[in-house]
Length: 112
Image 1: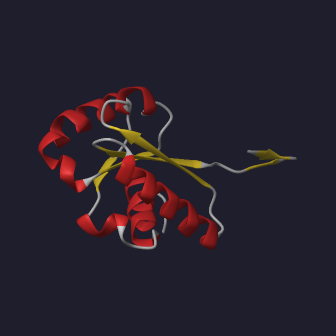
Image 2: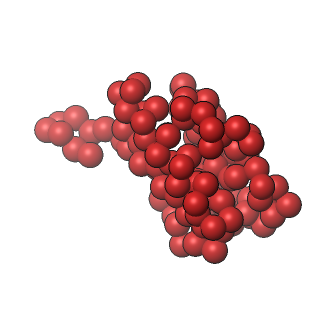
C-alpha cells in the first residue's frame, strides 16, 4: 500500500488445511490479532488442493497440524516459491490468533 512517499508492506500469510475450513477460522483470528497490534497483514486460507496456486506472493505458509504426514510435499511446493513454512500447533484454531501471528512473524523473519 502506498501513501504519499511512504510505503507500507503488507505481509501475506497463507494458511493451509485439508479442505480450507479450519484454515478460514485461523485466518479470521490472525486478522483480528494483527489489527489489534496495528499490523497490516493479509491472512489467506486455502485448501491443500489450492495450495500451489495460492503460494506465489506469500511471505509465510502456516500448515495445519493434521497435514503433518504431507508436510514434506507441502514444504517442497513452498520451497520452490521461496516461502518459509511453519506447522501450526493443534491449538491454533482455538486461540485468539496472537500466538499464531507471532509464529507467522517469526517464520517470515519479522519481529513479533
